[in-house]
Length: 216
Ligand SMILES: C[S@@+](CC[C@H](N)C(=O)[O-])C[C@H]1O[C@@H](n2cnc3c(N)ncnc32)[C@H](O)[C@@H]1O
Image 1: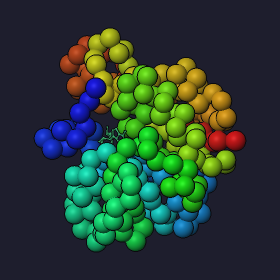
Image 2 (image 1 turned 45 degrees about the horizontal axis):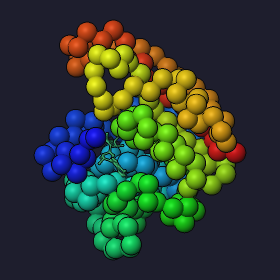
Image 3 (image 1 turned 90 degrees about the vertical axis):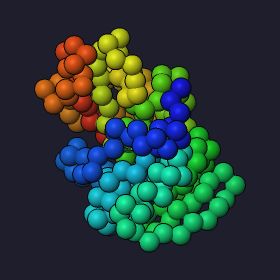
Image 4 (image 1 turned 135 degrees about the horizontal axis):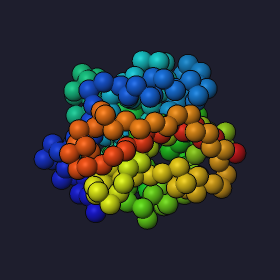
């Protein structure tokens, strides 16, 4: 099991990018958001995607196990924030972005009543198989009907490299989000030419897929 808290302490955060994700920019419209709507970012790290979403006029709620990540998010981006404590979470809040520091699985429907959409980049695929089932079930239980999810996944031969990120193929996404969701595959392509780490391990494909889901 990945020790995420330790990875943040050791600054081993190879997934972090300094620019917003190009697939978020390309497909954010599928979330059908209006100015002032709120987007939930599970397992958010200190993702710049939260800055991008706030710049588009949306409010953001993230959840992140590591308090260090939450602190770094606000200090790196020079955003003033306040800290408060509730039972299971330390809450870092600025005007438009709130990060619940604690365990995603302790988040309840009450935390997300105002959430219109979810953005999942490197959250589902950060978790091993058993936990992915629990993650999809918990996500279903805490979001409201009509909520849309923009989901980015990777698929590659898992036998060649161990995760995270874990390989999650189309069949698994269909099975995880089978009950209670409409699921649309927006894009899927092999991006091995841009993945030297995977090439070094003789992996011959890494499929990057983008889905839009809607809870009904
Ligand atoms: C691969 S990183 C992705 C971070 C972010 N989504 C991004 O794109 O930069 C996964 C993050 O999930 C956090 N995490 C793992 N398990 C968690 C849990 N149960 N609850 C909240 N955060 C968790 C880790 O600390 C880590 O920052």
